[in-house]
Amino acid sequence: MLNQLKKLFQSLHETSSKEELDFNTALAALLVEVMRADGKLQQSEFDKIAELLKTRCELPEAQVNILIEEAQQLVEQAVDMYSFAKQVNNHTSDIERIEVIELLWHVAYADGELDSHEDHIIRKIAGLFYVAHADFIAAKLRAQP
Image (cartoon, rainbow, N blue to C red):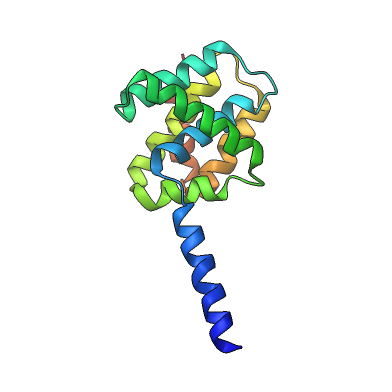
């Protein structure tokens, strides 16, 4: 019986490690979360996500489009943002996480207006990143058009 439990835990651990997100997918998912927050999927926000992924992650356009589609599916299936935020936390420094918050603000401002739902989502993500409020506000101000 004890051996069966060990095998079960090992198989669960192997499955979860195989399904772990990579950094680019996690980042794309958080960007998509902000895009979807106001209930309107606008082309300007989609274009901003694509631009950010191309420039910041240095990805070719074809790969960016696939990544965004995958991120949209993951976001639709996700119960929360914790797994996305955890992956970003594991691969970034404090300063880099503040830069990610700024990227999220760029997506929120991409359509020309900031919705309260977008603000709320970014605030939640900043909390998951352990970003101080002063840094959160500074990132918001830097991203304003």
